[in-house]
Image 1 (cartoon, one colour):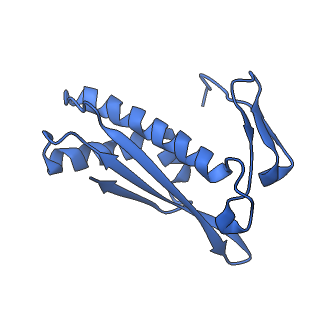
Image 2 (cartoon, helix red, strand yellow):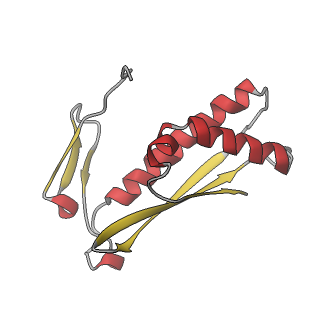
Image 3 (spheres, one colour):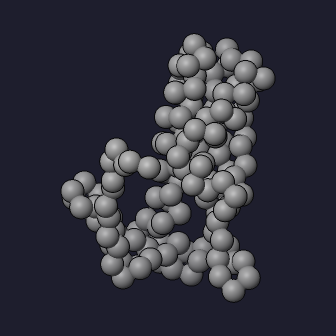
Length: 137
């Protein structure tokens, strides 16, 4: 692959530290969620992954929609990223909830979501590694 763009970010002090991008546009305090025993005072890797995946998937949906000449209007993608114990370590699971315009029939919407799942870089990176459930709402 020839990269068109490379994002660079550095995290210090793990889940209770700070994450900063090389250009300074991202500068976030990290914190362990209260559900995992932390103080919840900062964002966490799962929230960042959810934000990135939902934005990327929404863009992929726009690409396939335009190719199919289907107006997706105000389509929205919500990513739910769960983390839990698996064996000796931890694992992730993702649910992508895709809200499509009411004017779009369910079958066409489902087909476009499936196509977006084939072209989205996040979907391609996670395929076969973590479960990803697609929900068309």
